[in-house]
Image 1 (cartoon, one colour):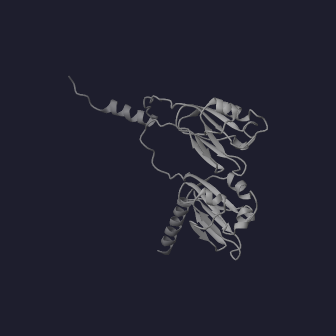
Image 2 (cartoon, helix red, strand yellow):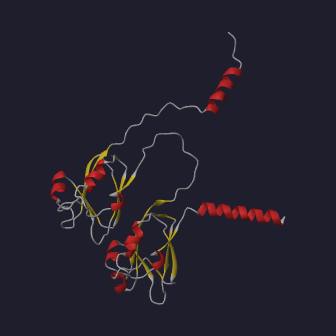
Image 3 (cartoon, helix red, strand yellow):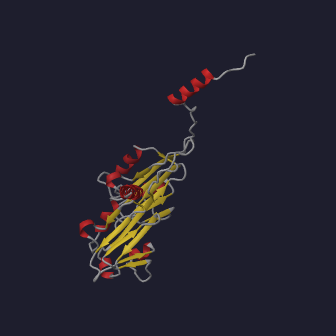
Length: 277
């Protein structure tokens, strides 16, 4: 009986580990922990993909510091901790990311925050949960493109870098562009026309993105233009033009039977008695 109980407990633990192993815990700042250092948390976060269910672990001296979660981009930018969403001050805080979108963290020590002790993370999507395959149907395949790949979104060494980058790819409606950059240095502006693109005209943008980790979905076919508002950066080549194709109308292929199904069909046809006329 005791052996059976131990086996049951072992199987239960392994099952729970298997269910939860997809979520990750990220120690903020790695070995440096949570402290003031200009730009360090931007560099730390940009190399990671955060998903719903992941957790951030903040380690610091709880006697002199804290973790303040704020709600908006403005509070984050200006180190405004007057109306926090949550405050953690144990010195060893684990914060679970429960919803997609932007999450902003600062310290309530204004001088420390201004010196760089603040973090923004972008939660992309949920961890996949294994499930039975859906009924057979044709679905569009969406792709995520990290703009510039390892170079990300910044002034390139060669002015035609982003032109060459986009020409090597085929973009379709439903695809996403992921812009990663230092939000203290650059931003992303969507503009309307080729003339604005060539002249780096920032007067009438369609949209402005400035989070440092921007996910932009391509929702319609045609040419889409992106530049930066920072003086001199667009002229130096920090601009992107992508041609978005419409979704292809795939024609479902005739369903192919597996070898086993073909055998069953052959046996059925061969041994099922047929009425005589």
